[in-house]
Length: 346
Image 1 (cartoon, rainbow, N blue to C red):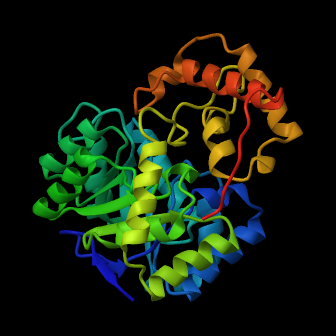
Image 2 (image 1 turned 90 degrees about the vertical axis):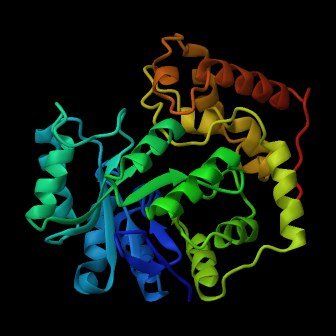
């Protein structure tokens, strides 16, 4: 197994982390079973967040008896000191632990700093002094804020979207973190589900010795792939490189990464799914998505009021209403037989 050191935090873990965002979508017992199997398969870094509904509870029930053998990272979206302490108290309770190894600000609209009017960074320091957390990190989607956090020197780790679809600026950020001795934690390594080529995704990330990927897992198949990569790391060969280039061509330009920060929609459009439907229909077997349920969900796009709240919240600056309309038009053409889609497995 290959280990990775998370910068000046001096946390050393196996180079495949468990991302618990998806386990909020499965029943309690199934989620507990997956998390425990991940630990028994060799994973020892577990990522969750207060915002991930019941994933902290599942993690606490799965791992409380092996607490000293693992690293637990959680996050808070709090923008006030009171909410910060409430989130931390709740996370510790749900995770059945007296401390968090890593506590992170969860994609805030600014970089919290000491003596700020918001008081958030000072609250982090107080929590650390009181032994409730061991290390301070931050997560971002916008590149400019991520760079600011790294340059500030205030954070021991940065969590940021990184996959083989990432551009040169994202790669520069990885190198900057290495230079500043800041742990780099890669989220969205499957680009929110759009990357279906597991070997290429694993092989790409494995090139970077300072990156800890957290793989979002909710199925046994996904867990087994991650554990296999943990035990026998996949190396990027010419075949995989060609497949990556093909994917980058198909997914060039503006596309929804599925981060979910645009939600909730004021008219209940499932943006996470609907804004990516055209891609799903071409990158996976179409029959998985041409369902009656999805017909109902896609039809909701007709109810869009163009309030643009989703657009304002998107960390990638996407014109979400327009993307929804384009996906809906494509959807209707596919259903009417005007456009054909096909899927070829690798």
